[in-house]
Image (tube, rainbow, N blue to C red):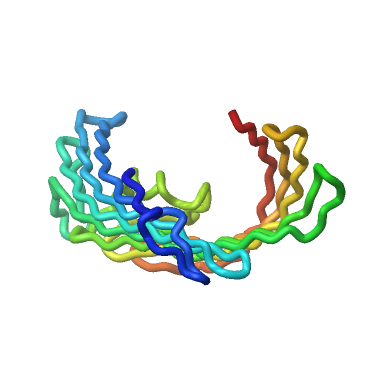
Length: 210
């Protein structure tokens, strides 16, 4: 990625912490059935902005084309048409917030975090059941919809995720965290976006800075 954020004037309320152009290439092959492969060429805009009151905003846009061969050909299940290529436009837009609520001691603190937005929105010139690798690779952590009903021609996942996190800094380089959160999002994407639900989630993490 080629980051130009240092050349963007810093405003009183908005500052760019990332403004990058990123060309990408992905080669994939089939692990099931007849042999096949896919070539993907991608041009990405990656941005992150610091906003007032501890808010951040991430906006990433991706334009890419895929070429398919063999078992990677796309099939429109409605018409039975096969495609050997497809164009996609995808964007991710997240509003983030983080605020320390309580400091137990010099090493342990309680933080409230929030993330929400499109994850992602996809538009394509093909109506076919195929989730490009770049989509899952760029989504916010592990928060994909529970059901993919196919047809990424015009689809989106939209979510809100408030979180409470307790962090223990064992050393300057090593920290441990435990978190509890509730995800609200559509559970189905593809032909329709529906089944909006609240999902309690939790987990632990270990971070080490080399």
